[in-house]
Length: 447
Picture 1 (spheres, rainbow, N blue to C red):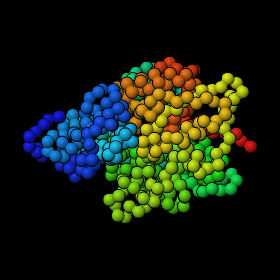
Picture 2 (tube, helix red, strand yellow; picture 1 turned 60 degrees about the vertical axis):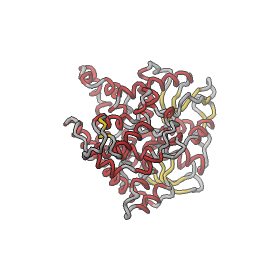
Picture 3 (cartoon, one colour; picture 1 turned 90 degrees about the horizontal axis):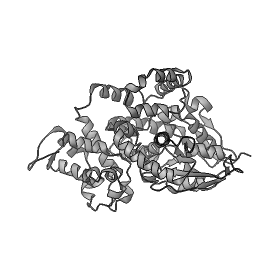
């Protein structure tokens, strides 16, 4: 990063001055409470790899003391966006907003993307994620690849060896895909069992709906059993989290507006998420659209009603009885990996644990550093594979230390990352990774 004694005008510096919230930059007291909470600082010990260090870089760029260059952009990219620094910060600095503002500015003035990266980004962010029908077509294609033997044939040719090793590993642990999604499987409306408590709208997600369709179906069944009418608005779209985290704020705002309209028209009391990353994004639509007078009030209404499924069950639902199917045999030991955004943004730490402890036939064991990021972080494990692998390696040391047979989590990205860790560590057959909703659904005692 090039330093200068006098302000150096360049397009990125000017954009940062406009985009970054200067009050938040100056709120940072440089106390260092964020350092032990930060996974990248924990791995490297480098000040610039910490929230405090990155904020200092941002402020120096805005103040004209530093010319933001490629090294500056790389430091912004290295951040996982887990936001573990926010609960640790005594000054309540909104670091997540700052890193997204910085990335948005960097992306607008970025010239170092290879041509194929630009093509892939445009295809994914504009041509795929915002379009549920196209996502289902992708799910159908993946299903064909997985179930016709095509995948096995391609693997046998060695063609996958042409891909980076981490992509080959991800292909091996990919769950069974679906070309229908939750609505195609069970429809849009579902009545509560017994007296109705409230009407909730299920946020189905984009990747969630084609790779974890069963989890969405199981979520609906858990909610109806607990006393909620469930609506799944078909006009909803991607939450925009991947866009916002990757510097595509304008697209994220457009997706937010579509979701606001879809759920308001559905007349729901709550908007329920079963994916920590999606839920956190939905809950921050009020900030995302706070400068838009036409949508600001709607965004506030929406954000106040977003809730994680575990929290809704614990605080408002009639929790069904749970008994793990293997009860009566040797007790099963389970543990839990927190979804960073569920814990650090949505504030749901206790609810998943309370539900797990209510399951008969299991022993819950708290994993050391369960609150530390697993290294998934959206597409971080694809864009920063080396750092992600280091973080995952340490995570699996703690997972092994629990001697648990089942590793639970509440976010699809975390779930895939834990499956990857189990595969890498040779723990298949000893431990499996399962979404909390699927485990509870499997354990639900039916009348």
